[in-house]
Image 1: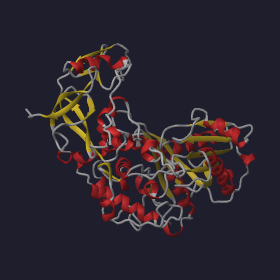
Image 2 (image 1 turned 90 degrees about the horizontal axis):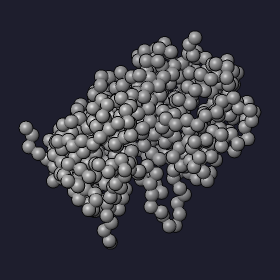
Image 3 (image 1 turned 60 degrees about the vertical axis):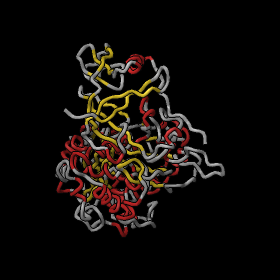
Image 4 (image 1 turned 135 degrees about the vertical axis):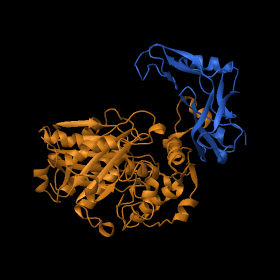
Length: 389
Length: 138
């Protein structure tokens, strides 16, 4: 039995995202996002029988987040519940778990939700460490003695090694940043909707941890994002055309990313493409996890759009931007729209496949390739989503 | 403004032998007693064969710059006067990698592949930490 097109995404709920303080904690964003997703699908709270939760970094109870949220939301008699944690690959993995459970007859309507609240409201006495440096600036063991703090610094090691081995440059990374900003300038939900960026702006942006400029790094956002997964049959009777789940796969390579310089995409692609019955040339557009510009470059290589090490030349010349041959991160991605971890690429794929992307709608949107990535290229999820079963 | 010290690593039980070596100028890594796999940082288990039996052994202290970054943000006040500064990954001749600093080379002159050797910086009577400096390649 194949799971190809047995299930579909029927609802999408996005709260306001960015420097927003509409709720006092991540749980408020969960409730709002799930309500919006149910409304979008034309379903009610009582239709839900599954809740999968990916807590962000600002949660206080991460071990039992889905159980806490069930109580907060007053959900009764669930058939599926889990708190999941694979970093940026979690969103894709939640959808896989939901789809598998629905196909197996264990659940009918499952909400998958991410929410976070890393940014605190501005206050007269600004406390140190309230921004992204405070939220993500941890150090491990001995490394603090050398000034090695945070994820940026670790990812920078991998990018630098790629540059040294393959000749990748900041011009290449800048191509990705500028292309995604152009997409964001057509996405009203993007934090950088009103802010264009040139190549010169990219190079002039401050260094964070070389080789990363500020605009190589994703945003930090408050907010919540939920999707509703149900059977393909049920999805057909709901408000929007179904977004079919055609292929699913995961890949978690292990080892040291400074050696491998690769994500888990080659592993995940095998199962996802086989299930979907597609090849790389069938992909109309990509929504690739982009904690950094560099992650997009590596993921393009790992899926086989180009050879290993040739991601830089591949993205050059506007290939992945608006009007390019391969549209990538068409809502601006996490670099320029909003940072909802793996939910960012999934949400944009839903909007594109439904044909609701307005000015940024890509001409061909039957098959979208969606990646999630967590840790330092440690975890990976691949979803193939499509408009036709 | 008063100068704030950089973080001094804690001499935890698992790193006791590492710091004992460092105090006397020896760079130590963990060796699996079962399969011989060398590892750093320290772990309770060998990731290769899952054995818990391990010892600390001295290594040459020679290696090369495998990768590096240049840090521009101040995450700890002890580094406020140093930004931008480089953090390097050294690949030792024995195969282990270590995060450290490179002494005597401006950040914008660092290149992957530079041959380096260990030197020890004394932070307290108890704690010295390995850093690296360029060496002539052979």
